[in-house]
Length: 328
Image (cartoon, rainbow, N blue to C red):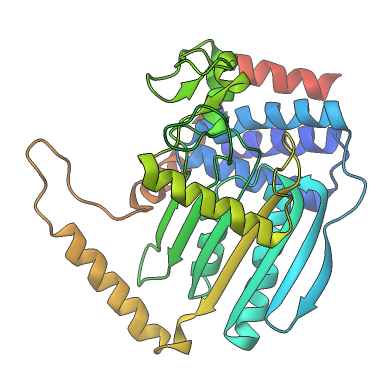
């Protein structure tokens, strides 16, 4: 079914308030979720709220707000108190940007959080202020190392963001062959997974989402992607997570932002990034391939189209379950 953007946003806010999120936190979560939908990432959109509510039903609602527990002029560490990563990541990014405006560069870590969402969302916040960003978030060990079948690191996204004269250049990837949210959504909708992305608990390849959730996901990019996933796990440890974050709890989130004018005038840097983007796009496509584009270009364009249409598609089963939460 279709929902207007306003109705979809209001739906998320109502659901989160039902779980004792205040007005500010509920709106931060809703903004992030709707941005996922606008960019075509439905597995991280409204369907993700069902996973959020199921987790909160098991563990209870957070009772404290996000807090700064350590701070210097160029750094800080936040304690999330089990608040959602959409909120914790937003707060960490806001603080990093504020500090970088004063000092030129800042690093902020956060722990005791979960489901950090799209790291590109936070990179776009930094790029809007003319800042370069590097962001990483670890999580529960759902992903097996290369040539292994037991989970030893998380789906572990890493993101790099650069301001330009137009659309920022943002590269945001997970280091697993499939994201946890995709597996959860496939399970809800009764879909099979692609071949080669997961193992069951006995270590055999599986296409069944439930078996994959009980087993492990394959890493993205073989040994190179697995190595990057391990790096993100350690960056999360630097941010304050335990070595082995428990199931959907105590993830580590780390963001580094810097003003480009530490190295060169911001205007010149933006021009050079735009020039490089044009150079990349000028590459001849391989036979049968589409026109070359830069990272973030497609999702940015999709978002603008959906904003103009002012509606998003949502699976009937997801909508009914969200409405039931509000009505109970």
